[in-house]
Length: 118
Image (cartoon, rainbow, N blue to C red; front, side, top):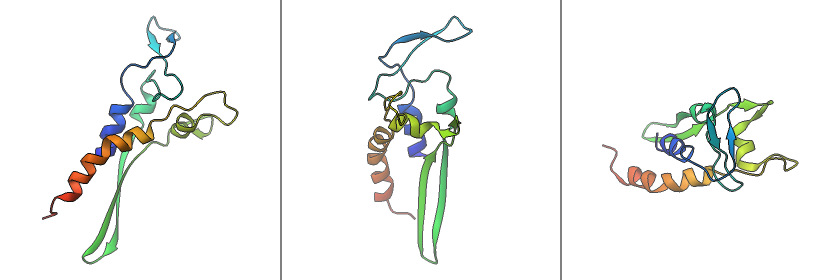
């Protein structure tokens, strides 16, 4: 849940790009600029994230893997990957957020693994 919670934190808040009118509403939102985490216009991408955990191992040797994933697609492509890397022809520049999520999570994860399990 650390990765999931920090994903939610990184994907919220104001950005510093252009301000647009949201179609069919009287509301405005501010887009992100290249290099900034993506702006949250509708909330669909932010809401699409889910924590995921699986275990591997036998007996006393068990590994627990934790992740936060979003498989939300736009035009057949995973939106998170398009936002992170930009589009192939450069029409949309990257809006990186994954590294920021990892950086925000690292200290908390280290603390969790430094404590005794029992």
